[in-house]
Amino acid sequence: GNSVTQMEGPVTLSEEAFLTINCTYTATGYPSLFWYVQYPGEGLQLLLKATKADDKGSNKGFEATYRKETTSFHLEKGSVQVSDSAVYFCALSEYGTSYGKLTFGQGTILTVHP
Amino acid sequence: NAGVTQTPKFQVLKTGQSMTLQCAQDMNHNSMYWYRQDPGMGLRLIYYSASEGTTDKGEVPNGYNVSRLNKREFSLRLESAAPSQTSVYFCASGTESSYEQYFGPGTRLTVT
Image 1 (cartoon, one colour):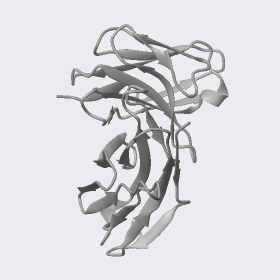
Image 2 (cartoon, helix red, strand yellow):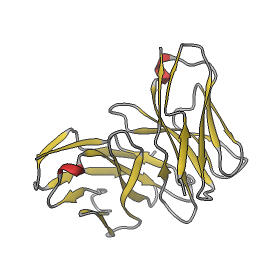
Image 3 (cartoon, helix red, strand yellow):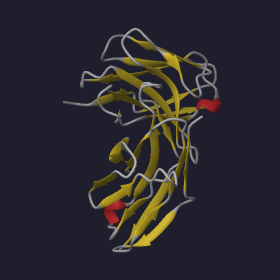
């Protein structure tokens, strides 16, 4: 079956530091890949997505590239802010076979200090 | 445009009690989903509904039932709550043309 593995957390950074959160996946077909973000006390929001190999998703300064050869979709940001403190989830969806069901990683807690 | 709404926001139950979590979406999406979120385990799919009138089990369906009342509403019922069902529950919706899902704010349930 499908699975998503995220780097162990939590991650603590100082403001303006570089962020990488690793994500690798296992899937039998051709998944779409997502990063969702959950701010404290809220539901999940889509941060970015990529639907095919070599696509780069980007939003709010965050980027992730769909790497089929390494089955990875690592999240990066060049300069984090305190407001980026949240839980980040990597996810995949194999549409067409599973009605868009998402398989999530376990989540990575990011804390950014001033 | 409210997106996905859930009620209640918080609930405390005693073991053996029943309750229904309500979810509604106003985006005209065909697919709806119920997830539970537990520390260190990400989100796990409980049930989903690909269209009005259909429902299917997800990864962790035991102890739950669902009803797709109409295109807008998808409810989750706990018939006899157990402490293992203490969790945060999220409803989501999505379409066939998009690979995205849109989430509600969640219901925090505690079973004592």
